[in-house]
Length: 315
Image 1: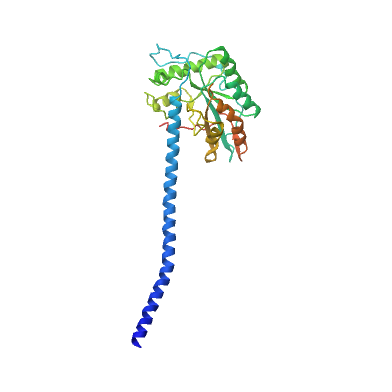
Image 2: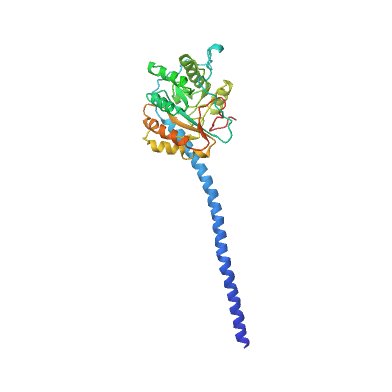
């Protein structure tokens, strides 16, 4: 009997152990899976953040590598820092044609459609589409003295869009040689636009963005120069992808512009106004409609109240 009792006791202990294992093993598995999910979630967050940074760098590189047929008009004899010629303050139209934009509206996402490198043979088509949807945009233009472009500069202003500066020549190797060369180019554009439209522009965008890697000058020094001149520069946080020389479809442009737009309270979209950017023009109507369909979202031009998007710090 003693042997039987001992065997029964041992069996009970095994059963109790099995019951514990039945409970412990699944719980342990769930706990381990939960911890793994947290770890993977954290890693995914950082990988996504890194991908966004890489995407910005790639798009910046694409912008830098893009060729531009604009003539070389940088002053070769600019040995001293270029100073703006005297302009009668009473005659200046500073950023003319802009409507008051309620930037401080709570809970409203602001979307800025910005076009670099114009005017071009596509500018009129872009302006027609913007007028059709009653949308105002921002044009970071270059210097083109041909008569065919004069009306386009003025039309941008007259239709209430923001006229802003990109560069006069758009030649990176010359613009970024020194502070003097950058200043000469930018101020030449500023005076050219004033003579053409009567607008004294104060907003600009660095060719390739402030995060470009081709400048021979520390970009912080160029930013400091702009601050001294009371000019404001704007980068972007969303790229349409149309800077690449390879063909990109209108559908992909729309996807690039709207895929993560809801991650931003202020979405600054980079597009290009150039003769070879037909896809951008073709994408524009559907892009505007998609943005306008978003809840609590408005398309607005850059104004004095716009908080700039910067790729690098001003410090």
